[in-house]
Image 1 (cartoon, rainbow, N blue to C red):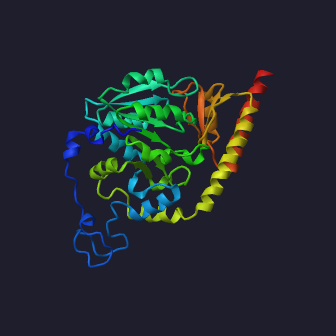
Image 2: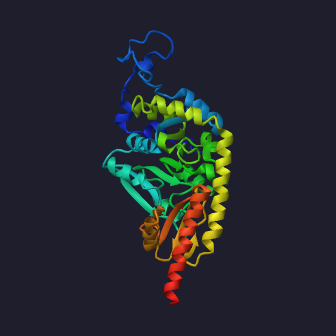
Image 3: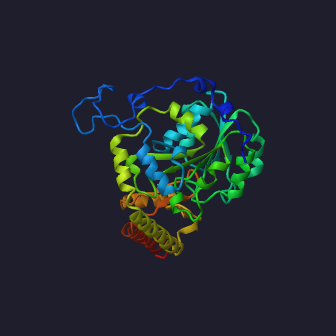
Length: 354
């Protein structure tokens, strides 16, 4: 239990003292009346400012996810929540954050933007946190944030639950568990444990499992005290009315969502089986996400050969040597990739045996 964590002491002094901008929709929350308060144009279909706290959308999401709408922050992608975490808790050129590499690159980008020193600790050979490496930083008062991506991007594996529990209990800062790919995972979300840990922030998104990447809606679940500061610092109208309405509409199709997840997971198993049969495949890393990290012979060259066939995967060789990250597509797209790989392999074998 992280009850000993004092959230207000972690927050930057200027943020604690900040008087947030008060919008017209903060002062009057009704939806009926003659609105002459916000300098909006009275004509048009999208002429009114959106709900700054996205109450209707949050209620729909909380019913689906099983969380408390009063503990939910919605941002312009999960990236907004990552940026705000740095801005709320980390004093520029003084405080630090921890990431475990290889991992999602935006943690580092926002650390650099906010002038926060980033401590990068390598994951072990099976992409798990080495507790001996992180232990010296757990009580450092200048280390304010710890990012744990699980399922991890780009490797696809879950970080051990017992490791995260230990870090939540012992770390003196905020632990941010990024669950962008949790809809594809066999393990349950950390949302069930949110009430136990004041220093836990859980990132999720509608981009992956729900297929709404174009709407840019990220979720961050957190203790109400932490949420107070996020709402204090965020831009007043950070999600457009169009995006909110479209998300509410798409979230009604829970059956379709479940069917699509089932297809993608089935396709992932097919891809693992087919890729395993190729002689060019060295290793397929275990994945709890909607992608596979695959080690190939000459991955850089293979990446270019696939590009020439207009099949685009992600070259992750600079992060994990000789690897391509392959998103699971529709069945016909996956078949196209497999057909291309087999053709490339046949061509190489014919050259060898000439």
